[in-house]
Image 1 (cartoon, rainbow, N blue to C red):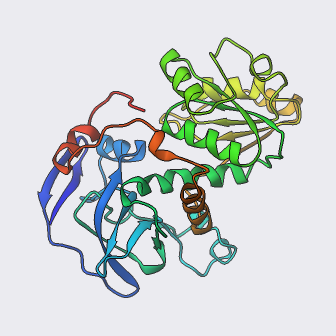
Image 2 (image 1 turned 120 degrees about the vertical axis):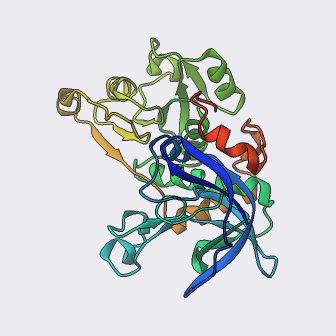
Length: 308
């Protein structure tokens, strides 16, 4: 089969490899659609310990034709985190596309219970269920209450998905973004308010936000959220930062703030994402983005620009 394989730092290419074999509790999925993530680009830039097929935002069909989406975080199933339903926090977690071959290929092998039936959703839109599930998981940790004012820092794809997740929890959401073009996009996609970093979230929303989700990397974005959120508020550090992100601990200390973070999602989050998209409550097809062929993926992975 054809697959995109990362074999060294900044070496990603389409190669012919043997198709995977489904063993033990796995099933085979013929891939029909996959999305590229910043994580995939980081893998391509840094390389992997051994040659790896990336891709964890994937949808396709089982051998019997059933359309499925793939939840990529595989827990051990036995530890306290897994027993509580948090397989994404399992110390022995294995992630499809990171720790084992992923879906930027014609076929992928996955544990059967991580191949989630799409229940009528179109396969082509379903790769976004994975990042949406991550955003829903993040929002579940910030205690959003109906009527809350919230702010999202960053209007890339993940920032928009976080905005929608917060809105589904009942919040009115402002989006802070340096780029005027992305601010305009956030407004078109449903933000209650948009603002630039030099502006105040309280003015944009009419009140000080109790919740902030930081979907842009770096300490500057996190510091901004810690200053702008209400006293006693909560900030979620959603975006990873390649070179870490220093913050002023006094902001947390004196302003009585809660700072949390998360990565990945649970199967329950993934199913919730499916329900929201199936009901039309979240419409991921509104997110702009090109469709490319498998042969074009290596170039996209190694492109150093920052697309939406």
